[in-house]
Length: 248
Image (cartoon, rainbow, N blue to C red):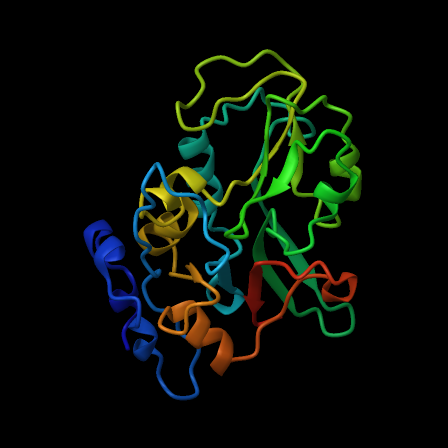
């Protein structure tokens, strides 16, 4: 398979068949186009028969590529103040290194959308919660900004809005004094569209990210997870992340 085969158009991304894991070559881990989802009607609640998740092939994640990070900022209206220590960042790139060999891996780190989210366990108001389909969110209407969830998150995946916010994205209303994090682009998922990071990874990167329903055997992500070794970050904590990584 040529690398060009992994850079379909946006239309192709959204309409590709869910069973596209057949694109995998024997013995070679190449991610197919991201799995699509069906739009959820506004009057229909999320369904626990679905568990949305991500798979990242670190073999294909270039150290210098920030397509996923940039797409997230644009989609969610995250305008930095030039203060990396406090600017909101729902996805960040991290480098892992093996001290003995010097072997390194670059990978995106975001909310892991845990099945057992520590952030929700410690939230005193219930603002941090998990939807039935596995997406972990923050209800900013009842977030009191205590930041217990930030301390509880083992992935350091949450940000705090320190300042008054302007020019916000309609799909991501934010508020000063609230905690925020990756929503797995729930607004897009509910509309039947893959998360912005996944779309950008396939359009501008090397197609290292795959999105889909981890409980649907017809989705490519489920087939790949069943066939190839993948890892959950800090699996020892039993949080059961919905984000998996291959190659680490």
